[in-house]
Image (cartoon, rainbow, N blue to C red):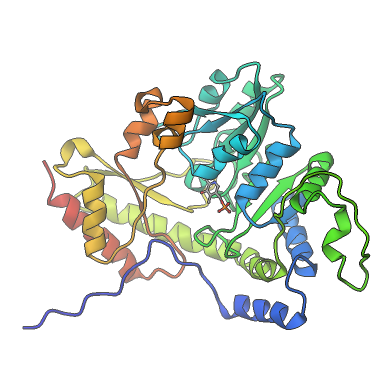
Amino acid sequence: MTKPPPEPYLPFARPSITEREKAAVIEVLDSGWLTTGARTKAFEEAFAAKVGSGHAIALNSATAALHLALEALGVGPQHEVIVPTWTFAASAEVAAYLGARPILVDIDAGTLNATPELIAAAITPRTRAVVVVHVAGRPMAMDRLGELLAGTGVAVVEDAAHAFPSIVGGFGGRYAGTFGSAGAYSFYATKTITTGEGGMLVTDDRAIADRVRLMSLHGISRTAWNRYAAAGSWSYEIEDVGFKYNMTDVAAALGLVQLDRAEELLAARRAIAAAYTACFHASSIVDLVETPTDEPDGSHAWHLYVLRLDLGRLTIGRGEVIDALKTRGIGTSVHFIPLHLHPYYRRRWGYRPADLPIAAREFERVISLPIWPGMTERDIERVVEGLVATVGAARR
Ligand SMILES: *Cc1c(COP(=O)(O)O)cnc(C)c1O
C-alpha cells in the first residue's frame, strides 16, 4: 500500500483577497496616481465613519501611528510610558524612539490583557501615557481604566492592531481604538483587514490630528501630498523634522475593499473560533487545554486564537507541540514572547523574567492556531486532529 500524499501546508495566516481587491488595485495602477491621493482620503473617511471617530489618518503602519500618537502627546526623554509586556515590539519601541522609558506591566492570566489596576499601579510623576493593547482582539476594560486614570494627566493611546472591529463592552457599541487620545490600527498582512502594510490613527482631538498629519509627511505643510497634482502647488514649508509615514493609494484601494468586507471577515473568524472551542471541548484532551473566551458583553475581533496547554499534565512542552504540528504541515505561532524576556529589555532596562511573573509563566504554554477567513472545515479538523494526537499522546 502506498501512503496517501501529504496534505498541503496549512499556513498560520493568509489574507483574504477577492476579485474586488484585485480590481480596485488595478484601477489605481491604471490611474497614474500611485502615492497618497484620492483613494487614501476616501479610506480615511470611510474608516472614520465606520468606527465613529472625528479624524482618521492613514499611515504606512500601526507602528507609525503609535509613534506619531506619542509624539503628538509630547512624549520625550523626561517621560515614562506604560506598556504591557504581553505585546509586539512596536507597542513599546515607539516610546524609546522619543527617548522615553518604557515601563512594562504584567497581565491578567485570564485575558492576557494588562489590567487597569496594574496600569494604575505603575504610574509615577514621570508617566505621560499608557499604551493599551487589546490582545488578540479582546477588548480591555476601558471603563475601569478611565476611572483609574481620571485626574492623573496620563494619556491613553490604544494599540488596536488586533482589535478591528472589536466592540468594548458597556458603551453601547463603541469600537476599541476610539477611547484613548488616539488609537492605532494595523493593516499588516496577517491582521483582520489588510493593505499589505499599513495603519490608521484615529482621534477625536483636532490638535493631535493636525500634528500627526504634519509629522506623517516630513513635517511639511498639510497639502504637500498633492504638490504634483493639477490642483496642487509647488510651494511648501517645512514646519518641523517629520517622518515618511504616508499610505499609498495602492494600499488604500485594497483597504477600502477590505473595510467594506470587515463584518464578513469577522463572521468567518468568529465561526472558526467557535468551531475550535467546540471541538476541543468535545475531545479527549479537554482537560489538557484551555480555550480562549470572549468578553460577556463585548465583541472579540478574533485576530488570534490563543490556546493554552496545561503543562503540569503533559510530558512535553509548547515547543514540541509546535514542532509536531509543523511535521503535520500545520503552521502556528506564539503571541507573544513577553517584551521583558527579550535581550534589549533585559540589558537596557534591567528586567528579569520574575519581574512580570504571570506573563513569563503564560508564555510557556500559549500556541496561536491558524484563524483566517477561507480556512475550510478540513483545515480546522486537521488542526484539531493534530493537537488531539500530539497532546493526547503526551498525557502525564
Ligand atoms: C502587528 C502589531 C503592531 C504593528 O503593526 P504594524 O502595522 O505592522 O506596524 C503593533 N502592535 C501589535 C500588538 C501588533 O500585533
